[in-house]
Figure 1 (cartoon, chains in turn yellow, cyan):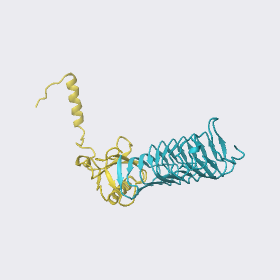
Figure 2 (figure 1 turned 90 degrees about the vertical axis):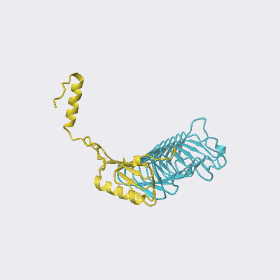
Figure 3 (figure 1 turned 120 degrees about the vertical axis):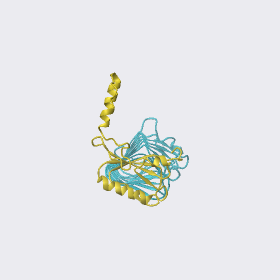
Figure 4 (figure 1 turned 60 degrees about the vertical axis):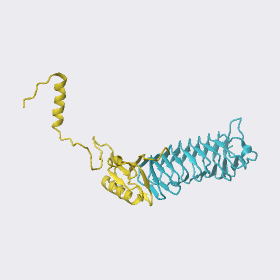
Length: 123
Length: 208
């Protein structure tokens, strides 16, 4: 099919679209895998969401953890991240409410950052 | 701010770690900061905070009972309620905090700096600051005693060459004991002209 001739801004727009098409951009960057840092050496980020949070929030997570008896599953995730990062610097974002029914040790060098939890009100 | 419930211990062990915006809701919970050069900001610890690593900084937080054995760390711009802070790590800086109904500050390590804090309503039978150490600087703090209950504002129990300067003790008649007590040696004192330091302050030593 013959393409209609474009002029001016429309031509520029089409050129950009054609250029982007040459790259195989995935529809969902990072979907189903930890959000390892890109952009040339940025800090890696992991999102852990408790199952106390709405499904829409859980779907964004790299890992989900039960809100009750959270210690063992949370420690398992921490250990997995620790093995993956091998002592590097990285952020772990936590969303939700976690029950520490036992002791937990964060991965070495982690920056632990809380995001919030549903139904908790102001703290 | 994410929330931890339950009575377990959460340990931040690695060097250069950070912990931000976390609520430890249970009074039975414990947060341990054991890695060197860790930073904690906007943490609410309703249970116990244990600082065992060196060079640890805690900022803009709300804490209760705290033991602090790492050296060269600092607590600033925070709110301390109910519990006490017991310092056994040298060169710790406690600056610009508010202690409300807290059992005060026990300084058992040398060369610490206690500056710019408010000690409000320290409860019965507790000193706002008790010192068993050398060369501690206590400067520019404001004390509001619980009338008839708070022991002293500053009690230098043991140690030498401690410096207690420029603090506002409030009404010294409100203390259950003397506002200042010194059984150390060579304690150095200086107060503005309009301040007072109780009736029975004795033996301020050669440096006063």
